Amino acid sequence: MLKSVFALSLLVPTTALAQGMSSSADLLADAKNDRWSVGVAVAIRDSPYVGEGTRVRPLPLVTYDGDRFFWRGISGGVHLVQRNAFSLDAVLAGRFDGFDIRDLSRAGLARNGLDASTLEDRDDALDAGLAASWRGDAGELKVTALADITNASGGYGFAVDYAYALQWGRTTVVPGAGVHWMSSDLANYYYGTLDEEVRRGAPRYQPGSAVVPQVSIGFSRPVGAKWRVLGGVDYKFLPSELTNSPLLEPDTNGSAGVRLGISRRF
Image (spheres, rainbow, N blue to C red):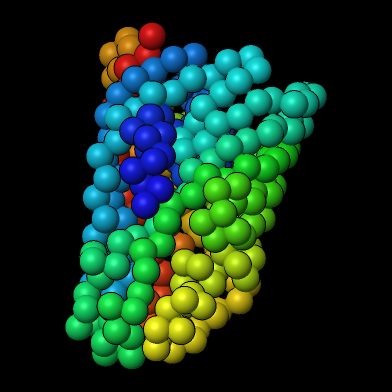
C-alpha cells in the first residue's frame, strides 16, 4: 500500500495535531511562531470500519514555516499570493484514509454481506491543489480544492473551514468547524465496493458524492523557553450515504480523533 511509500507520514509536523489543511492548523501555526520545530506526538482515531477499532499512530514531528515555502500537518506547499488578509497557496497533502482488509473483522464483514476474500485494500494517497484563506479579527475562513494525483481513488474534494483563536494566558485554544465535499470517485473508493470486488461476488455499493461536516478544537501552550505542548480533538459527522456502507460498523454516525504532542523550536 501507499502507506509504506509515503514516508511523509514520518515527517508529519506539529500542526498535524490541528487537522493539517485547515484554518485551525494555520492559527495554531501562528501561535507557535517558530520557523523550525521538532517533536513527537500520538494520534488516536476511532475507526468506523468494521472491527478495526482504534487506530493509533505515533508521529515524529518536523515543521517548517518559511516566507515562501511551508510544511504544516500532513500538508505543505508554496505561497503564491500574500496580500494582507488574503493568501493563495499551491499545496500537497497526504490522505491517510486507506486500510488493510486484514485489519477488519471477517465476521463483521460477513454480517454486512461481504466476503473478506473478495475485497481489496484501500490505498493512502497524495493530493494536490489550491488553498485560499481570508483572515481578520473574526478568525480565518479557508477554501481548499484538492485532487488525488496518485490515482488511488482518482477523486477530488472541496472543503470550507472556519476557525477562531482564543488566548487564555499563555494557552492558545482554537475551535473550528468545516464542511468537506467528496466526489463520487473519492467516496466510492473509501466507502463503497470496487468493480473488481463486485466481479468476485461482492454486492455493489457506491455511495456517490458526499458532504462530511466536522468540528474540532485544538490547543497550544509553551512550556519553558523552547518547548510546547499541543493537541486537540475532532469529530467527523458521516452522512447516511457513507454510514450505510457494508464496510462500516452498523449504527456508525461518525469518527472521533484525539491528538497530543510535544515539540521543541530551533
